[in-house]
Every structure is written in C-alpha cells, then in structure tokens.
Length: 274
Image 1: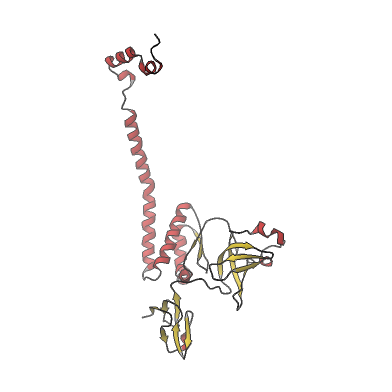
Image 2 (image 1 turned 180 degrees about the vertical axis):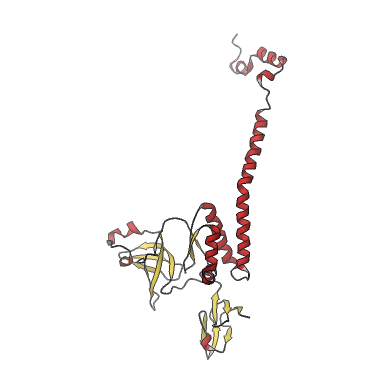
C-alpha cells in the first residue's frame, strides 16, 4: 500500500534516507510530524490534511495588502508570518509618499517569496513579468496542502479545469486561487475547485470531476430552454387573463343598454349632477 492516513509521531520507516517533507528522524527512525496522508513510494512524504501555509523561497503566492508603512507594504500571505514587500521590489521607481497610490490596503497581488530567514521574516517581490496586481475576477481560499491535488500530476488537473470551464486559473502555493472568466463559467470553475478540495483524498477524483462538470454544463444548457418555456407559458396566461372581458362589439345589447342607463363608473364616482 503506497498511501495511508497517519498521525503526528506515527512510525513510518527504519530507513532515514527516505525521510522527506512532513516527517522527522529520531533514533534512526522516521516518524510523521503532521496529521495527513503518507506517501510511501520512493520517498516518505506526508501531505497534511489541514494547516497554515509555511512560506519557502521561490513560492508564487497571492497576497493581500494589510498595511502601508514607510518603506514596506505588509502583506497577508495566509501564513502565521507576514510578508514584506519593500518599495525597492516594486516594478518601477516610486517615492515613499506615493506608495498607497500604487498598492493600498485590501489590494491583491501575485507575488514571489524571495527569502525566508531563520526568524521567519518573509521577503516578497513584484519584480518579475509573471507578477502583478489583481484587479478583476474572483479569489477563493483552499487548504494550502491541497494545492498539489488542484494542480495535478504534470499540471493535468488544472489544465482540464481551464479547458472545461473556459476560465483562466492561477493557483498560489499559499492556497489562494484567482479565477477570471465569464460569470457563468467562473461560477462553474469555483464549484469545481471547491469540489477538488473537499474530495482530494478520495481515489478516482479525476473521473468524478469530469462527470460533475458535464452534469453542471448540461444543466446550464437546459436553463435557457426552461426560461423560454416559462416565458411563453406566462405570456399565454397573461393573454388569457386579458381576454376575460369581452370586446365592446361582443357585448350583448342588454349589457350595453344597462351601462348607458347607469352612466358608467365615472358617474358613480363623480355623482349625479343632472
């Protein structure tokens, strides 16, 4: 069995050379350091089922500006540690007094982790053509440990999602996902991403997701037809109601004579002035 659910401190192997992420070595043995799914093939790696994002140099992530200081933007990176984006790491030269004009509190950015020191000071940059401010679309949060499942082997899962939903999707290593596209396509993409997060630990996910996308797209194709039928039905009903009263020429002579005699509703409202 290549995979199994493990808890912190659970024994995994006697071969310390196999130890990888999510493990620790003690007295020549390998143990799990987190609660998650252990992969025992080739190397021993434990993917946590929950937990905060721990930044590493080279990670491309999505951050939210929380504060503008004298020379740094303070960035929420979905981690116990804040990110620091120094003014010198902005793509163009700007003055300290202009910082909030370019990035202000609440703005979202695609940024790169350049360094993490022993005290967990996380330094970021925007000096790369792949990095930018996010001004459109929708950002959703998923568990950071589920990011590899969202991407898939060799990018297979994310490629399938983009193709089936007609959306552009960027997945940050910190579990923030940026999606752009038409409203209905965007809604479908969000549902699909959340489904992957929820069912990432279950086998056969790709097949289930493919069926899910086909079913959802089938429903959307039927909606315009149903709306058209409802509209036609309503129109017919309205026409029926409008035709309840007979036309003037269709009224019986006795009915017309009675209306003329009574003077009609205006005489009733205004009173008899004769």
